[in-house]
Structures are given as C-alpha cells and as structure tokens.
Picture 1 (cartoon, rainbow over the protein chains, first blue to last red):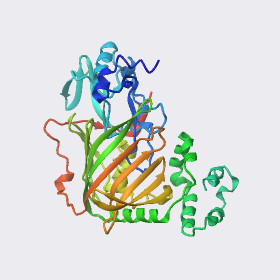
Picture 2 (cartoon, rainbow over the protein chains, first blue to last red):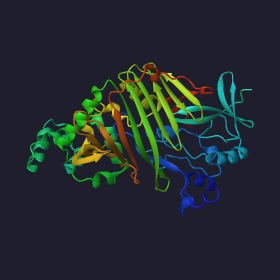
Picture 3 (tube, rainbow over the protein chains, first blue to last red):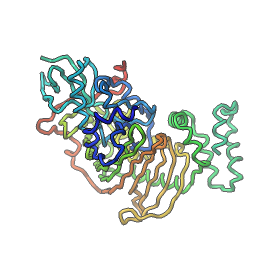
Picture 4 (cartoon, each protein chain N blue to C red):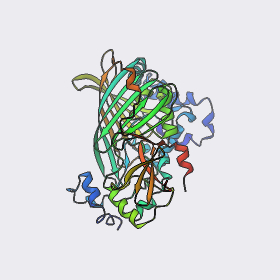
Length: 151
Length: 297
C-alpha cells in the first residue's frame, strides 16, 4: 500500500529526476540516503541532523517523505553536497501550505516557486501568501523556518 | 582474527596487557612476520579511538562484520597510505579537481547515480575554497583563516561564521559544530592523527593500474563502515588519482567515486580565499548542529 500512495502525487517529482521510463518509478518514493563522501571522521553526526526537522507540513499529503531516520544510519542529507531534493517537491509543498496553516517554527526544505524573496530590516525571507519563511543553512542545505510575519 | 575480536568485548581479560602477546601468538601461525605487528596494532587499537565507528557499524549492520573474512592488514598497503599522507601534508598549496559520481539511495533501496564536479583550492594552513556542483545542487565553501562561508549560487544565499585559524581545525569544527562534512575531507586528514592506521581493519595491495594515463597502484581498505579504494600515483608525487568509497552500513552499498586531477604547484591568489558576496546575494544564518538538536520536538 505504501508503494502506491506515491503514485498519483509524485509524477512531477519523478519526472524531475528523469526516471519516468522506469516502470516502477512512481513507487520509489523519495531519495533519502547517500554515499559517504569521506572515510575518516572523528565525529559522527549521522542521523542527528534531521531528527529535529519538523516535516509535518510537507508530510501532510504523504507525498513527500523526507523522514530520513527510517534506517537509523547513514544519512548525510545535510552533508549531501550533490542532491537536496527535487525542485518538484516545492509543488507538493504548495498544496500543503494551502491546506494547512504552517506552524511557526516548523521547517521545510523548500518553498513554492511562487513565493517572493523579501528583505525586511536586513533579514532575508520568503513570503508565501500569509506564511513567511526565514531561510537558514543546516549543513550545506538551505532550509526554511516558518516565522511570524515581520510586517 | 575476527573470531577473537567479538568475544573480547565482553571477556574479562580484555584489559589484560598480555593481549598483545596473545594476538602475536594468534598471528604467528600465519607465518607472516610482517603482518604480525600490523595485526597487533589493529587488534589492540585503543577502544576510545575507534569504538564509535566500530560500534555503530557493528550495531547497525551485523552482516558487515560477518561478510568480511578475517581482516588482514597488508603492510605494503599501509606504507603506501602513510607515504601518500605524508606527501599530501608536505604540500604548502595546491588545487585539485574531481569528477565524481555520488550514489543516492531511495527509500526502497534503489541506487541512482549523480555525476558531479569538485574543486579544491588550498593554501596551507589557512585557506580553502571548495566548489561542488551536480545537476541538482551547487555550493561554494570559502575559508580564509578567520571566517567560513557557505554559498549557494542558485538561491544566492550565503552564511558566514567565525572559523578556527587552521584548515586542520576547520575540517573538524565545520563537521562537528555546523554539520558541514567536506567531501573528500580525507584529503586533509590523511597523514594526521585523525586518520589513524589503527582505524583500518583490512588493507590490500591490488596492483598496478593506469588512471587517466598515469601509472598508479591500487589499494583497497576497510574502515569504519566503508570499503574504500585509492589509486596512488607512482613516483615522487604519490597523490590519490582516484578514490572510491563504498558505504557498507547501508544495505544498498552506495558509492562515491572521484577521479582527481592535481596541481601540486598551484599558488592561488589571496583573493581566492576571500568571499565577496555576488550582487543580490543575501546573508542568512548557518545553524549550529547543537542548536538544531535543541529544537527537537
């Protein structure tokens, strides 16, 4: 069942990855893990960086699953220099943002392309209708925190 | 030798100094005098040094441990690693370009390969500029001995934070404080105590290989949740010409492979290591890893 919940909602996502020719592509779900990019590490923050991210508002439709702790290991999402997530994810967020009131403090990995880049008092925001996001780097990835409207 | 390792974790004689002698006795029947010291050093590595990696890989992927045959550490391979590390650390400045493939893994275990380029420009001890680019993501990292900047050309967001005085410290601070683990950070760690040979559980010399027309020697290692290979150039400049890292803690075993082209006489201009925000770029925060943790629901 979980394989099919992606089928309707993810075609744009899949298309963006260029894998539509794969028959089972729609059932793949999100790319959640990646290879280690170094051998030596005297630190181990694997799995730490995403536990905190509140993905509820982009999981509402169950179409974008960025829960990366499923496997308890190996995740380098924010250390992944090669892939954050498909641009098309933003479309899914658009829908979700329209459906749910984004909670202040919640974090998403992308905002809809229709959002406006706005600077207020020297601070960069993305304004998406009545929802305001403040971008920040977490590791090498830009994430967006829902904040109180600055004006 | 692996079979003697697992019970040792709980054996009451674990801390007995005679363990070294025991290992020697175990290794002796192999009839390889050269291997014995390496086997000893591997088996008696301080628990504090590598226990995190070993423990986590064993805990998350018991199959990995059983899949490997008795780990053997070839002295020649370790010597080559040492020589490469010493050479890399002898460089005062350099630039290196990489052509990489990076494996992504989907929720249900499918691997997809992402091609990418990587470039480092380095001034020892306090300058670094990194540019990494795939079809999906592009980042620049700039460090001048005082500040560290991360920049995304597409989003035009940059973040600048205070940084330690040396590149060596930077690699660790960036990773531990900001969750920024530089790709192929090993290039800065080999030849230092942070890339201890004791972390290598298996080392093999595979043989001669031509990489990009250059004669190299291929070596294969196992270490902390990875199987990794390096092709080290023959001659007086033993640089890694190709590196392949296979993540063995992931059942899909994703790989990161990079062909490297070196300029060991590069002398980047000082401006290389200064970040000048491009027109329209906006500054945002770089969140500390600990700060992010505190936000956990």
